[in-house]
Amino acid sequence: MNLPDLVRQAGVVGAGGGGFPTHVKLAAKAETVIANGAECEPLLHKDAVVMEEYAKLLVQGVQLTMTATGAKEGVIGIKGKKKKAVEAVTAACVGTNVRVQLLGDYYPAGDEYDLVFNVTGKLIPPGGIPIAVGVVVANVETFVNIAKAAAGKPVTHKMVTIAGAVKSPVTLSVPLGTTYRDCIAAAGGLTTNDPILCLGGLMMGTTTDNLDTPVTKTSTGVIILPRDHHTIERKLKPKQAQAGIGKSACDQCRYCTEYCPRFLLGYAVEPHQVMRTLAFTATGAATFNQWAAMCCSCGLCTLYSCPEELFPKEACDDAKTEMRKAQVKWTGPMNPKPHPMMDGRRVPVKTLTKKLHVQDYDLPAPLAATPLAPTRLILPLKQSAGTAAIAKVKAGERVSAGQVIGEPAANALGAVLHAPIAGVICEVNDQQLILERQ
Image 1 (cartoon, rainbow, N blue to C red):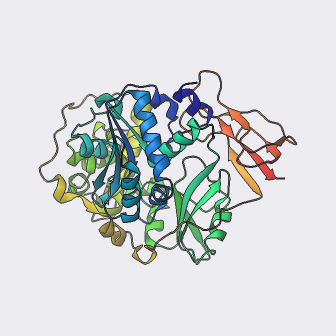
Image 2: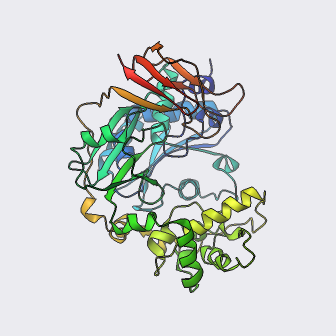
Image 3: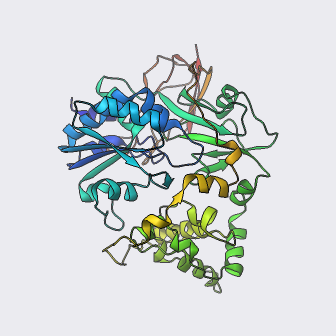
């Protein structure tokens, strides 16, 4: 069986947040394979821990991907400040055709457009993906899972960081379906009585107050902050209020655009022009603006750049949604050229941490000595890009660890789901399975 089939059967998807089924990438032909270990979301450490603990498997996964895609070059991008990870991965690369490339400590160094340019000097065409310039990119944990898949091991566990308003920030290896309530308990419990969870990070993550939200294949960690924290108050502001504030207060200062990482790479992304469209609402019709099309939703414009604390990132998100509904394709410039001030305008993560008012939470989150072993797992059937898996088990059925419990429809884009532990299926519906340990 070839590698793409092994990876598909193992249920491997992008582990850095996107969740694209990895077997599709392995079927392409490429010149360069890049492992993304940039991890630039403030307070998250799971990628660094993955590299420290599984350096050999990481390099093996990159080599397997190079063989599958015909690539001649393999590169692992790591921030220079992650010294233990750099040392571990550099040692694992000795005698191989894979090398380490050190990255600066700025946000968002992990944006694949930025990463591909830094490693290869190539700019992905506007609206394109890395393979358009002969590159395959995946998160470092994804490559570890590729190596495991080649040995017949499915994806059943996830590495996540638990940080913020907890007593002992920690990085955990947990079975898929573990609730954040269990993860928080492993971090010593909360230090706030009214917690809000930022799933995936403060900049690009989503917010919830549901502690029973489960860890999935795309989880990277959670930052917990009090509901009255300024950054949380901003993130929880209703969409209508966000747009109303922008409509009345935006003075077109351009800071959102001048700090935009995609604009600095030379792409036609201009959030300040998108903000103008907020005023074009006299008819009540939805509006969009193509200056949002290349936005990567990194959140710098909203949470760092804007001196009036407006919401240009959210305006760009709304514009992209309306463009998709209207089936509008990008018709702007196709020849990006990096801005001469690109290096000078990159935002250091330490500066961003201060801007977010979370420097007091900026603490190490070492790997827990004891793996978490919850008794009850909540397993969403959709844990990747594409379609949800279809349950292959029934309530009351006993399953073994690693058994297939969900599969996408034939020829559909999606990911196979395996039982992380042995136990009994207690509930099955169209959205999720609940599995209890025997």
